[in-house]
Image 1 (cartoon, helix red, strand yellow):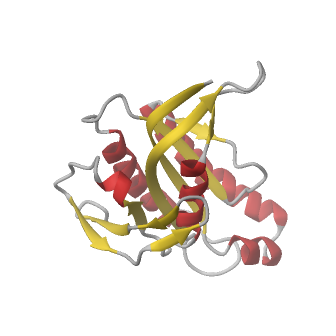
Image 2: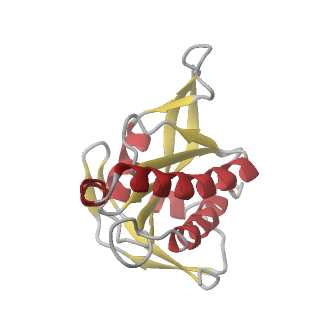
Length: 188
């Protein structure tokens, strides 16, 4: 068990998943999730990030990336990966209506407790308010956009992105949070 001062979490949430799951066939929804998460897994493997269990929430994909120092580019890499995930989601057909799948994305940075839970767990587990907060932020993010927090903004040094201030949110696990919608020239 160890404390980590700076971890960035990327959370992707399938928009309108409950309606999709109730109106589409189970097989079609599961095949859509396989196609979506297969692309996400590739990005995680390329960067060496930890994919975290969604704890029974099939519509949530969570990634953790530890920072190696105050000047590393971990948060920037996660932001660029988020745009890769948005492009990938646009290639996945919605299983119960015309058009492509829609996802909500958020990146939040903060402290976490990290532990390896038992010998059968494939990777480390992350605990703390930062992990809970990124899921809450993603749930309320606009579909097909990336929302980041001010704590993530501190780590960004990406010239190709612009930040649009969003409404501050009150997140149950951490309180008031300043958020930004990220726009990327290379997004399309």
